[in-house]
Image 1: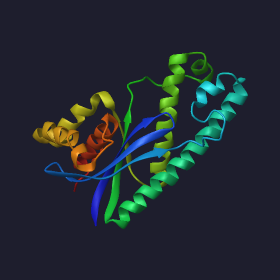
Image 2 (image 1 turned 135 degrees about the horizontal axis):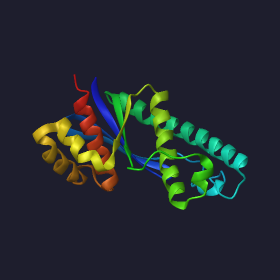
Image 3 (image 1 turned 135 degrees about the vertical axis):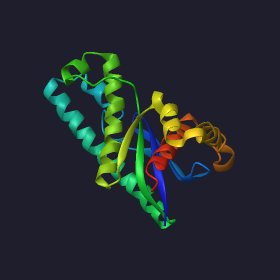
Image 4 (image 1 turned 180 degrees about the vertical axis):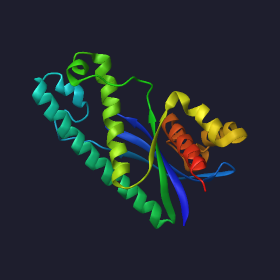
Amino acid sequence: MGTCAIGIRVHSGWGALVAVSGDANNLQVIDRRRVDIIDGEAPGSFQPYRFAQDLDLAAAERHIAKSAAASSRLATAALREAVDQLRDRGFRTTVAAILLSSARALPELKMILASHPMIHTAEGEFFRQAFREACTALNIPVSGIRERDLEEEAKAALGKRAVTVKNEIAGMGKIVGAPWTSDHKSAALAAALLLAKHRP
């Protein structure tokens, strides 16, 4: 059985997931999908912190906790489906990478809800955490890679092949077809460098 790594670039309520296999000399994209992790019928699920802004603090805490549990559950189910399908095709998922922002650590909830930029930051972290919990639930080692550090991390993991691999990934849209956006390219590069780091 072959091995593969997953890279995920997260947005509000969903993530772009790309699975890669092979090595720096023969990298293959073996899966690509959009993973939705919100219950569209639940009020405030898409922007949990913005919704909580209009609630008292206790109600805000309950709403965020409930939304987090739902997103974690949906992320776990979707990731399990992806991993199972990869396994059926002969690939074992060994590691996962989640792309991170460059934001600082979050303050307490009261301070978050008082700041629009902080709410935006918190919601990004909220959905990344759902994917982290999904990986943990499935016993997949997960690493966070700051997006601004992605190229430097790639150079450290892939050496002289880093630029070539990045260019190859950029052109993979011709092979895998549309969509092949910056989300997919970044997720694929993150997965590739993590696969290189963990290769026996």
